[in-house]
Image 1: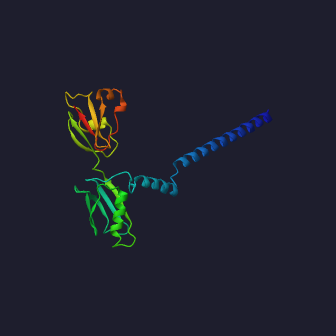
Image 2: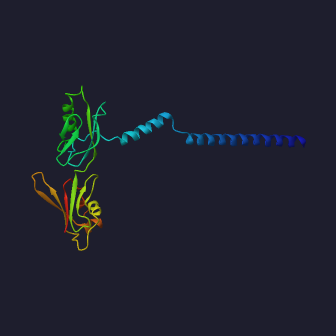
Image 3: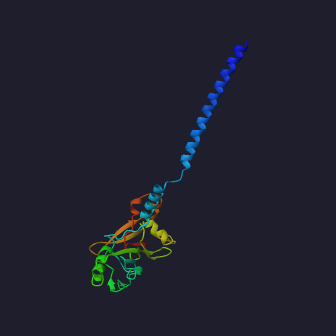
Length: 225
């Protein structure tokens, strides 16, 4: 009888030890997962993330398709020449900007790349291998017009992609008695004429004829009769 009890006791002790080992192993794995998930980013990861964020925030030096106009604001940087570099230079109504050392330069009608090349050429008599960068800090020359029965008719800067609905909202919406089904957009053609594009406000806000809600282009005029 004592032998049977002793054998059963040993079995119970053995099973208890196995249970403790399994519990301990599970706890260790849980701790490992927790530590891994809460582990801070390595220095390389942090620097890589910061670099990507910095790259996203750096403006492009120039856009070959953009044409500088009156009212735009430029940053002109001459490499290693802080006294000759200028930030927030407005393009005046005569289309010119004032640049240290070389004076008045026509900026309107040029792309930033073309203006860089012209400034580089003008600096060459004074500097050895000048490097000039032109960045458009603010676009004020590209505008659209909205006329007629809206709360705030006038000219608005076309800085971001803007649809006809966006433009009407910017102008405070339609006034009473506006012919919302007869709105149209006048768009300048390459031959100097205008194309008339219809816009039915009532249809578009109901989800119909949404193709009429086009993105505006510079010098477009919206007429709300």
